[in-house]
Image (tube, rainbow over all chains, first blue to last red; front, side):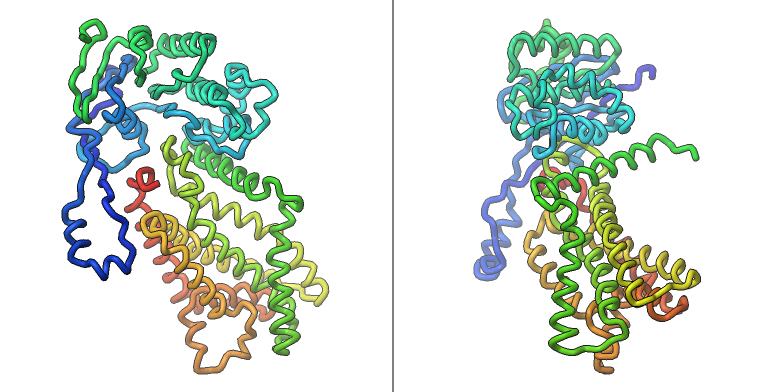
Length: 240
Length: 258
């Protein structure tokens, strides 16, 4: 284990092409010069701009910044969803992601079926998920709805189920994106207990939140993004 | 046999994807999985009415010829066509989890294999009606070769189709036409004796023709013809490797293309 960072990013840059106009074949042929000009001058949106940092095993990192600054893109790259980028990314541990609501759920399947689907796709075997099922259902606390399709769930129920799965599979790295924002007080309290339990087991936490109280409560280190650049990286106390 | 955790996990991931496909496919339909029998059976009936009764085409045990060919063709065509939208159908999973995307292609393959398996009792029933008893020495090698070549061909095309369709949605329409043409260029319902000699070359270059003939030999011509696979096997393998290569090339951007 030692000192090798669990997450290592070096010069990570992620750009998305902004599609200006959609060309069908007819338009390509009729407006060929314009088309070639547009293709040659694609406008790019730089979501992450030369991001470099590393995270040690067991560190608790809060990720902050205004809307559209690249937080979710960063989590998506670390979580292995976006796989084309410039720069280097090394992730050395099993990840569990809780990216926004409806995270990795199949809307037509029941909550119970989604526990199995989501957990297995995140790297747990079926037998392991079967063993965790009761604990997750207990945490999610959605009563008889657990056997109804998740498209009928309220946002609170979805968040509880997603959070229950993401934490029950005991990841080495937990990525949480705004998951707690929708919950009521008792849900937040339960989430807090879960996160503290994982932290005491040495899980590395990556928490995205606009709520500074949450960041201060769970995180020791804060990274602030602005237009895809890291503009602050340091301990919570030093954040202006 | 000890299984490594990685293998066990891949197996479980395919299992949950297949079971999801099954649940969604028959979700809120009254007849449920009976549909996977009714559809191939009904299309066989239509072919029989058109070609056997109206056109009066003759082949030895024509209903058996038709059903054996059509069930195999439907298996192939379903694996290909269901893979066209497999990435789009699973976009919520692709955007939130990082599992190996190629498992979706194999998931479609195994789902359709199960549907194919469900149609086998009908085929057995027809064989009993016509008193056809295959010889073991023909059944085993021909079944093994026909199914493995079909797997390579269908999954290879499925890989390429699934990946390219994300970038170039016109492909869906193009594939619809290609698969229809391919059906007519294959010995599915056309008795080979009805094909004019100057068009027989189509069957030589069409890998599905070789696969269907190998499969039909089980019911018609006892014997195994290894010389047939000199060209057929490399073609299927190349299609498979090429399809997988295309998929791997395009895979890093799947999540952002949706």
